[in-house]
Structures are given as C-alpha cells and as structure tokens.
Length: 388
Ligand code: IPM
Ligand code: MG
Image 1 (cartoon, rainbow, N blue to C red):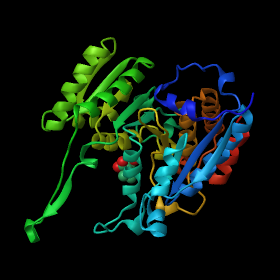
Image 2: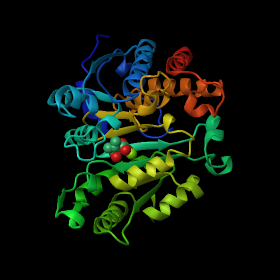
Image 3: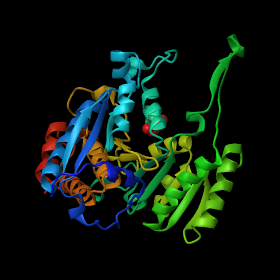
C-alpha cells in the first residue's frame, strides 16, 4: 500500500480511546502511514528526554511499518534566549500543521526572576491556548514493580488506577491579572473565570472516558466558596444527568480530595477538575507511583493535534548530566501514538517494553532508592532492546 497523507486521520483525533480496555482498530488501515511530529524539547532535561523518546518512536516505526518525520522547534526559556519570545510564531504554525507534538519541559532558574516581563511558562500556556488544548489527561497508575518506591504504603497504593482530566485553557491561568497601588498597599489580582461551554466540553470528554473504564466520574471543585466552582458544579451535574445517566457520578471538594488521594486512591476512576486544582492535585497524585519521572500526560482539544509531555518539569539540577529518567517522555510518546495517531498496537508495545525494563530491575537514579542506577542512555538502550 502506498504511503498516505496523515491529515484525514488527524481530523479523527477527537474520537479518543482511553484506558486499558481498548481493542486495536483494524491495523491495515494505518499500515505505512506517515506522521508529522513536532518536537519541542524546551529547557533543562527536555532535550535529553525528548531525544530518547524519538529513538523509541523511530524503532517502533520500523517495527510496525509507520514512518515519522520530526521537526524541532523552540519553546520556553531557550526560545526567549534565541528570539526574545517564549512561543515564536513559527513554533505555533509548525504545531498547527503537525499530527502531534512531543514536548520536553520549560523553565529554569535562569528565567525565574519574578519581575521578568517574559517567562518560559508563557510558552507552554500559549501553545495550550493557541491549539485549544482544553483537556489534560494525566493517568495515575502505579507500576507494580515500583510500588516500594512510593512514599505511601503498598496496601494503600496497590490497585490505584486514576485518570485525571484537568481543564487546561481556562481558570486563573487565563483570567485577567494585574497590580495596582504601591508600598504596603500594592495589590495583585488574578481573575478565576469559567464559562458553561468550557465546563461542558471537558466534563463530556471525562465522562466518555469513564464509560470505557470503571464507569465512575468524580468532579472536584470548591463550590462552598468560589462562584466559578458553583457554575462548574451546576454545569457538570446537568451534563451528567442529561447525557451520561449511566455513569456513576459524584462531587468532592478540592481540599477533601487532597486528603482522599493519599487515604484511599483506589476509590477513584476518572476525576475531572479545573485548571488550578488539577495542577495541584496531579502533582500530589504523581507521588502515588513513587516518582514524577514515570508519568506522561496528554493535552487534547477538539480534533486538532494533541500535545504530549512528561508531567515532571525541567529538573535544572540534573540537566545536561545525562542521568534524567526518560521513561515518562517515552510513555508520553506512547500516549501520542494511542490518542492522536490511533496506533494502539504501537502504544502497547512501548508500554510493555517499559514494564519489562522495570520488571528486570533496571532503574534510573530517581527510582533506584540508592541502589545502582542507569543513566538516560542506558535506560533508553534497555527499552529499545525490549521493544519487539
Ligand atoms: C504543569 C506545569 C505548568 C502548569 C507550568 C510549568 C506552567 O506545572 O503542566 O502542570 O502549571 O500548568
Ligand atoms: Mg504542574
């Protein structure tokens, strides 16, 4: 079969698959597809881990008969250094023309001055907004092999399988902000803002995902205090009642959720929440599997290219040393294959190789608990060897 353009398939990206129960679509349809991937390595360990994931993608391409073309663009601190802009227009244009985007991390102490006018994080927020990536999926499913690396007891963490849907293009992140006054009267504000439409679309995606899993959705808000949370709660309740009456639905306040996550994480299936609450809760939840270094995330919108990244940051303390854990980014590449490119088989192969590496006792320093560890290159080679 002749190679086909990827564009018609990109339009189907909204037709998502979630969780572990998905069975592969007819493989021959996708045979010999060619996909355009934009790489945004960014700052700190970003370039090291993205190039590791690219090696994995190249190998899986050979194994499964797909071809990927890679184009690297600037974002974050390095983009500020080279162009003065954390999100150059060229980067946005290339992302829009791609099938999917793989991002490393942005930010670092070099650009941390709170009085700076441009910040690396604006690049990340900007690309989320520019591509309307309103849903951020963060799966929290500890690997059996790493349970002892979790700061929580095995009996609490074992069996946890949560899929977070964090709203990603609204809330205080994009509300109006400013300062006025001076001296002790100097005052800063940041508006928390949500519309009905913004809540509906992310709740719908989360509820649809719940149907493919344990059929349970929990919405998290702070409706006892915040007006945007009350709008969120009313809207979510209506969507669930009208469109998802079959999905078990409950509501938890964000402070209580912070507690439940470490007390009884197994009780949750899909969790949907606002941008700021999701930012905080997913960092908290990321500790359940033992290391931030293992967790991928996907940011998706209504059918355009999705953006995939590890949820850890740029880790400036170890940047350039070649010791970063590449597994979260490799798993992000697997999510990219699954959600944007519909290559479930290829995604499963990568996930199996990562599991095998862990089962074989191989660890990078962040998950080695003081025992001997592999560097980034050795870990990459171990994954490549097991990719079949
Ligand atoms: C994340 C990060 C970002 C966020 C930062 C780097 C802007 O913490 O993706 O969770 O707050 O969204
Ligand atoms: Mg965060």
